[in-house]
Length: 301
Image (cartoon, rainbow, N blue to C red):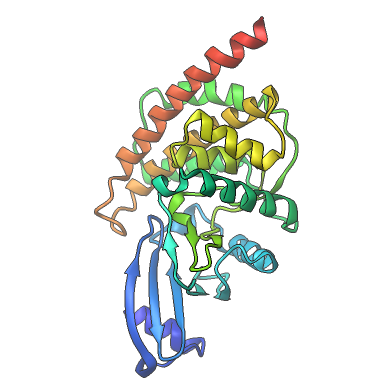
């Protein structure tokens, strides 16, 4: 708790005497706290152990400031580009979403419209989220930390990249890149917010849509609602191919994230990050097979 008191006092947000309550809330990568003072409620984010190896906090600072006018993120109070400490205003009546809630058809439409607003209205930033660069960064972190990976990792990686690099979508928009269900917050007025922008950057717009589908376990029907709402038309074959192609990129990258985080378990010792990595890798293998059966065969006919 001392860290929280220091953040609040050093930034003139509150004194220790005026803090009424501090409670920890969820988060896989960082330590997050709700801080209640006499007259306001804040959320304080303290970066997780060694997350600087895979997250550029200065880039995150550029992005959260660029997003402020859209009012998609929780209202920003301060962001430290060096330490990565972030303080936001607490969203009134905040309800953290989960996969089941995100599968409600009305919520799927809300999510699609939020992503469309982000992708079309956000300013361009000089922060690129490139799958090949991210893989190099993560693989270096794995090598440096002697993290475990499956024996067939490089075989599957090569097969996946051969497909990923056939993407025909050159468009790059400011993307969240990690839209977990728990990163969506519903306020008391039924307005949807999206928080935790540490992986954000300019990326293929289908990445966010594909990631939502994966994390919330959407059915084919819900995928069609998501895509048709976002695109404002029925998705064509090329839209569907790009959507499924991005699922390969996502599973490949986040499997590595799990293997890296296993070596940093002193920060979150109750989480089995290696098992998470294995599950994502197995999803990659399964989705790779499905993609090859559906699209490679169709393209050859």
